[in-house]
Structure formats: C-alpha cells, structure tokens
Image 1 (cartoon, rainbow, N blue to C red):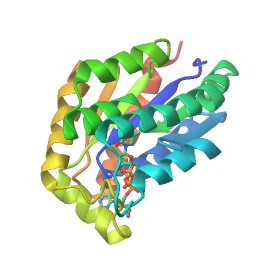
Image 2: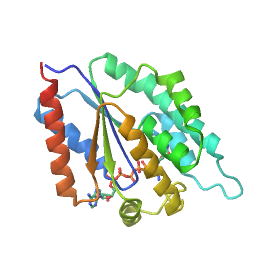
Image 3: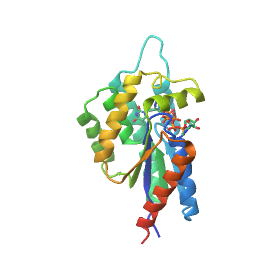
Image 4: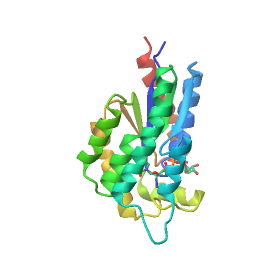
Length: 212
Ligand code: Z5A
C-alpha cells in the first residue's frame, strides 16, 4: 500500500510534460493505483483556464507587466489548489500536475527577473503545506524545445519571447531544481521512446522505494 501522492512535472515548452504526465498515469495504473487526477497550470478550473488565456493573449496596445503576470499565475494556482488539488489529495486521490511553483521561479523569476524572495514569499503565504512528494524535471535545451513547440502550432505570447529569455528560464530551473527535495531529472533532448523508457524506469524505482 502506498499513500496517495502529489507529483509535479516541470520543464520548458516542448520538453514533453504533457506526454510525461500521461506516461506517469499509465505506470501508476499498472501498479494498481487507479485514483489519479491530472491537472495543468495555469488552468484546470473554469476561472484558471480564463487566466491561462489572458496570459497567452496578444493585447495590441497593452501588455502584462511581469508583476501582473506573476500574480496571475498565482491567482490561477490558488484557484486550482483550493478548489481541486487539496480536496483531491484529502480524499485520497493521487494528483499529477503539469507545472507548479517551480515554473514561476523559472519563468517570472529567472526569465523576467523578478526577485526570488518575492516569489518564495507568495509560495510560503499560500502553499506552505503543499510540498510535492515528487518533482520530475524534464531538461530540454531551449532550441530543441522551441523547435518542437513551433512544429505543433503557432506560438503564444510567452512562447514568442527571445531565446535569451528561455536560456535564463532553464538556468533558473537547473539552479532551483538542485535545491528541491524529491526530484528526478530526465534528459528530455533524446528521442521520445528513450525519454519514456527513462521516466518509466525512474518512476518504478521511486514507487518500489515507497511500498511499505
Ligand atoms: N507559465 C509561467 O510562465 N509561469 C507559471 O508559473 C506557470 C506557467 C505555471 C503554459 O502554457 C505557459 O505558462 C508556459 C509557461 C507559463 N509558457 N510558455 N511558453 P502551455 O501549457 O501551452 O506550455 P507548456 O506547459 O510549455 O506546454 P507544451 O508546449 O505543450 O510543452 P510540453 O507539455 O512540455 O510538451 P508536449 O506537449 O508533451 O510536447 C510538445 C511537442 O513535442 C509534441 O508535439 C510532442 O509530440 C513533441 N515531443 C515531446 N517530447 C519529444 C521528444 N522527446 N522528441 C521529439 N518530440 C517530442
């Protein structure tokens, strides 16, 4: 028996997070863990999905300031955690979230240059008691990740930012992930079947360690 867990998947665009979330859900299912909820950030509630659209939209004569963008990410996260994630965890469900706090540290902190202590204060203020049991960071180079994202659809306002922005975002991810507890880092530059194989191996290993 394993107690239900909160799992977070992080990485740049095109890292393969969506694919990884489904892959983790399948592995858990094979281990007879069926009660699983998949969510994405920002999003996964009607209000948070509207905030998501707002952060991706092109406003011709206006733009989101970096502080507004940060607070919108947190508004969406609070909405999702309070309304969906916490109740699900309290009722014994497993939750897999495509992105969480580390995204804000990487994008709004590393990428846009907001001071880390401002972001960690928001984290402490709203999510002190919600620490992921496992974070999987899919490490992809910005060049490869953006190339994959471009192939899939037209780029939104965040995806259109400079390569330099994504380089700073990745640097911040790598710095913060090293300090993060319970983390698995996967090289996501490889072919999808190799990435899937590595995720499967590491997740099974992690589950085996949790069995009591
Ligand atoms: N954001 C923020 O700034 N601050 C925050 O606090 C939060 C978010 C929470 C969310 O938009 C945006 O919000 C995101 C960060 C910001 N902005 N940007 N840019 P999103 O959900 O649209 O973006 P995303 O989270 O990066 O999703 P994504 O682009 O879909 O990436 P992904 O989920 O990691 O990748 P995927 O959908 O699994 O794969 C993308 C494509 O690549 C797809 O066609 C796959 O088949 C292909 N792929 C995946 N892996 C491979 C490998 N290994 N080889 C070849 N092809 C692959």
